[in-house]
Length: 337
Image (cartoon, rainbow, N blue to C red; front, top):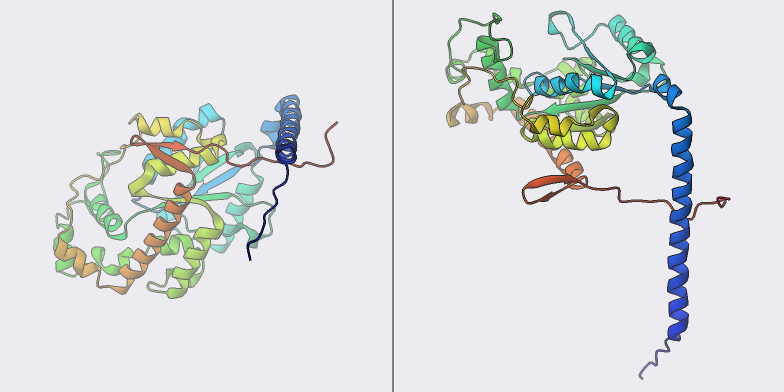
């Protein structure tokens, strides 16, 4: 049996559409009024805003991941964007702080008003501020790199330095052995255990974090990455990381992308005398469980970053563009007078 569909009159449909359109228009108008009043309020309190700006970013940088290039962008931007940059210099570059230093550091970061807004950077393992009884938590950011590429870069850096401070004598200076020769001879500086660094940096100050090959440490590092870090980029896509960071936190990073693209700081630090490892060397390192775990963490971080990027930027004619705001507010009650 055929079913007869009865359509409402055209005028009723048009009235409904117009009503919906009017509601959205009114809502957007109300939002505009709210935003205008908010902007006026901010203008009246501009003298107080800087005093109340307690923003703190911590970049607990992993060695040889492009961190110097990125931090120098922050140093260039700090006078323009009116924030402070502080390097966390730990004794003997030890990424693990004593308990008393952990407490001191957390208190410094949270209570040092003269240094807010502040950008802290240093080779320090992740610290969970919530466990120290302080109010407020900083924004954490970081960059990771392919584990073997990072180790190779670090290996040659210890022997030959880089173009940033070429005259500085390095700890392993004089050792001319290549990375391939080191792996072939079973040297300690290129052992799989030396790959274990990015996981503990994200895992933190628990003893298990520094137990090379710990599955608990791997899972904790993943949890911290997704729950405690605003953004984690990858060295291989550093420009995209900077672009997204500028869009998300313009208070600190306005102008960072253009500065990076200009080339002034984009390739500031290059490890000298670095030779790419052979396929045989790479294959030998990839047999180690530690490499498999560090690579799993790297791939996890890469996938997360690419997910964030896919929802933040678009590519057009070979150039990346930050997406405009894709949400608005409506149906605001009580009604604005």
